Length: 80
Image (cartoon, rainbow, N blue to C red):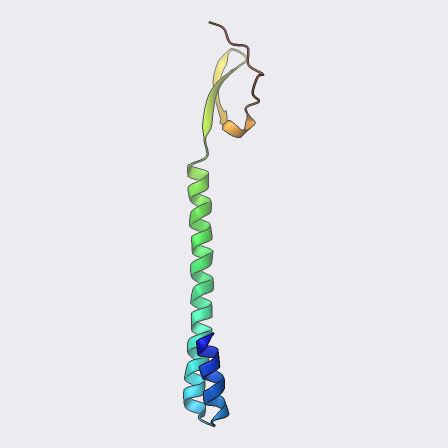
């Protein structure tokens, strides 16, 4: 935000070179921020996939590994 104000002030004073440099820095900063945010979102999504809890259940007499979100509480028939 401060860079934008500095850019506007430089442009108002009629100093085109400094104004252009500040504008380039502001645009580069915005692009880098966007790229970093996208990479961070992708990393979080990958971590969530890796950390998804799973459970081993018995289905039709055999053990099957399923996502824990698919388990319905109280639907099991425990045999002791």
